[in-house]
Length: 295
Ligand SMILES: C[S@@+](CC[C@H](N)C(=O)[O-])C[C@H]1O[C@@H](n2cnc3c(N)ncnc32)[C@H](O)[C@@H]1O
Image (cartoon, rainbow, N blue to C red; front, side, top):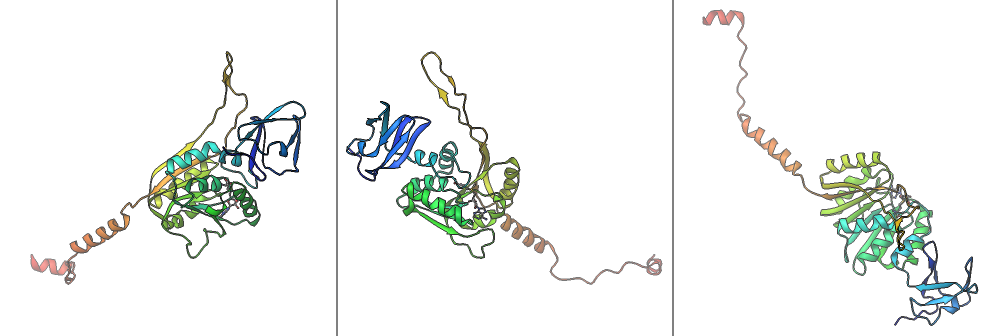
């Protein structure tokens, strides 16, 4: 039975919109509209148990999951949300031990979620060009407890002369113009490795798809994921009034070998075979004079 102690991570849960993610620190208290939540009251209790505020409200002590860390992440940028995170992992077959390339760390939401899946033998190598976002991501990744499985680097792969990685299982791309990096990402991926790109607009999807075809990717699929919450109560269950509108589209593809190079080679060698090897003297066009002679 895991007991809560000093420094234990805890989600103080009142309801779906009122919950606080923290690390227990004996001397701290939260002053909330449902009363004061004293951290010290949680020490020694089992996860799942509850404490009572000075306004007689119950607060549950939940062990945080990766979902909680993502939903409570410090935003430096737009982030990828759980509704998309789950599909990305399922469709790309991300699993323990894999090597993941990520371009556009942002706030580190996707990084943390994926690192938690590939650990303990897998790793996420993530690149960004903005120092401020990288610092925010570093904090978020640390909070989520997955720093050991993540390497952050300030590098622009659009312009990089040498490629830092090879034989990656999956590449995750979240930047404005993902099509630019596709040829380089291809070189860093293993055969049949997967790509996922996060594209907030359809224009991006179009350009990206063209680049994927051009760079010999197959199984190309674009999707949008809509999550609808249901308020289930006896006799009056219905859709929630609140909901997330558009967030992003996702584009998936896998590295293939279309055989264009070998086709080019075949075409070249076939034409070479057909061409006569010895060059004959060019046949002179008959002049009016010579044609008269021969008749
Ligand atoms: C929308 S955010 C990524 C959000 C991230 N997926 C998350 O879930 O938190 C896009 C990030 O791409 C970064 N970026 C833009 N151009 C880049 C480039 N050429 N190479 C690497 N990162 C780049 C930006 O600095 C920004 O942090």
